[in-house]
Image (cartoon, rainbow, N blue to C red):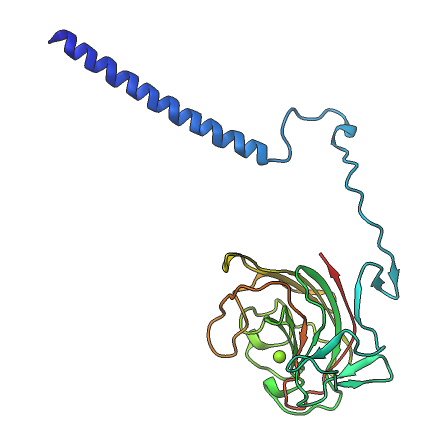
Length: 267
Ligand code: MG
């Protein structure tokens, strides 16, 4: 009986020890993985040279009238070569103006780029007409639909309140802008948009889209996690898609919004 008790105790002790060893080795594995994932491991450097990194060397980008040399110019006033109407892929009927801008031609429909884009830096300038017409969402409403789905609102909001998640600079019906940075009605605005496309795997969302927007140089969307395709009625939902065009909106209520100087840097 005494030997049996002793044997049981020894067995229990060894099992506990083994479990403890397993736990500790699992803990070590996790700590090791964490360390491997960290950029800065090893002993603290003791010279400035030890932390100097020589590659990759960033490609040189020069500016030509503010347009980066590695940008794809989508509109510079020299025609609509890069654009088609969304509905039927026909030649763009919007107005081409002598000052190098274009203006929405009412009820001709949205236009979109011939090219498809994923992650990108987009520069676009827009202005509402100097002569004010209509109220709320009907005053100079247009928009930039990134990947045909995610709208950054364009609207004349000067002395023209509307629901803030649909105002100028909103990710429409998803994100109120951090500030209202519009130029006076009839003057040019700029949007600089940094967009990271959503990632899908087997039709499932793996990573949502993110967008950062500067309006006339003012940060108005700060790495906002897009919740899905813009819905006028309903909740946003993701649908699996690949690279897709940039769309400019004809809101079909005589918006007369103009655009100019549109370029993209693919990221
Ligand atoms: Mg709009």
